[in-house]
Image (cartoon, rainbow, N blue to C red; front, side, top):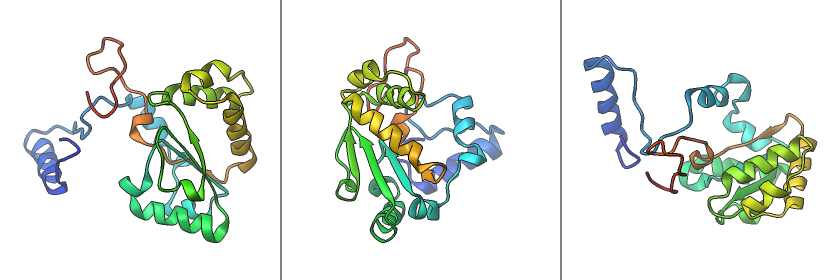
Length: 183
């Protein structure tokens, strides 16, 4: 099933696979995604946030996703939190976002999402970020400031992320990177 499959078609497809063929293996992405271990770690109950958490968090870091396109109601909660409660929004993406006027916008070079994550991880661990930051097309000081802001927010933060940000194997297993938006 692909991204253009209607909900009803997806439902019928999963019934066919599960009930008639006896297979629990159903995938809706058109390109390979993260490993089972990565998905299990990201879906750990301790890491889950609720919709109200978006509104009431001290800091929301939006990583390479446009909430208005993928989940408009979540964007409304983010705007409400920023407007009424002073929730700090930071949008980190390679493209402009509808939330930019309410947020601190940080841009990285197209295709630099993995390097950006490595730079942010290094900054959070107090390691040098220069090489990763330059590979992401972003100033190292910006990454360091973002890491400091995340540390200051403590546990009261939410980090929505987009699927392109997740690692996954190359489409043909040859080690070449996936092109954005398709196999």
